[in-house]
Image (cartoon, rainbow, N blue to C red):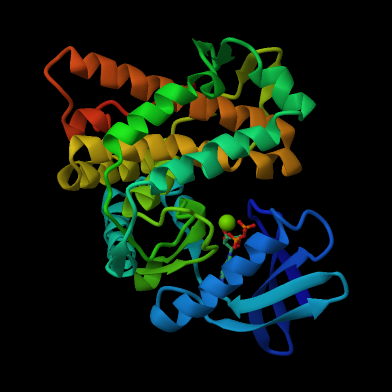
Length: 351
Ligand SMILES: Nc1ncnc2c1ncn2[C@@H]1O[C@H](COP(=O)(O)OP(=O)(O)O)[C@@H](O)[C@H]1O
Ligand SMILES: [Mg+2]
């Protein structure tokens, strides 16, 4: 038997296993430690995978089995051969046509999933913000590394001074209430970052892994914001390496990636053709929320990343709030401006 650990970002361990001529991917988690962010998420993922692998058999890997091994729980899924993550794919090529091909397949897979719709509720956004932003921030408060960094009136992220998001929650909620008007929800992936999308270039095939059940709102806008988390905010790029935190300063500059930028440009253009200005603002508010909802997980894994993504989310909100104010002085927002299609967010990303 051979067992190779695959890189992921959760409290689960993911392994590629070969055993007696069989190969599969095993995801295991402690049944004892940190059940809220470990076992519960692993468990709801298993259930989502079981359903989706029946409903969308070519888009989700099949669940082969699950069970218990002493104090861990595990499930096994089909191994996707010759796959790279969408993030690896776009960052390793400068071939625009190849990126466009992958982009079209991703949109197709996503649209199929999203075509199953149901009614939402006008108050759902309040619950989302409470659970996924305010409560996630509250869970970090009391952690000395978080308090040491986030309690300042301003923070300095890659040389840019800005207020931390905790001090701007009233403004965040006002913008969300004003602009988030989605009346429907749909089937979603739930954690649609580019490292959770597998791509088999030779077959032009997209496979979704690592779905997430606990989204409060399952809307297309939330899904789009998770892609932006990767392509616009450079989540996976920032997640490598070690940020430097010193009092209210945090520095972690990363190199700009032409393939990722091309993908982002395609995606922003695609969004601008489909969303009105309010939906565009909502996507950016949700992009900010992605960085807040991950903080308790980061607190468990790596405290310097907790500070980094808190700063990055605060930065993204600051920029959005400025764009909204300046547009109101210039005759209102249109989706191209609201999404910053021609001026992507660069926040310490150097050429
Ligand atoms: N079925 C699969 N076939 C091939 N590679 C996979 C498969 N499932 C996951 N991977 C690889 O393992 C990585 C981690 O798996 P993932 O489920 O995303 O774990 P985590 O919850 O830790 O992020 C993925 O980004 C992908 O590269
Ligand atoms: Mg993952």
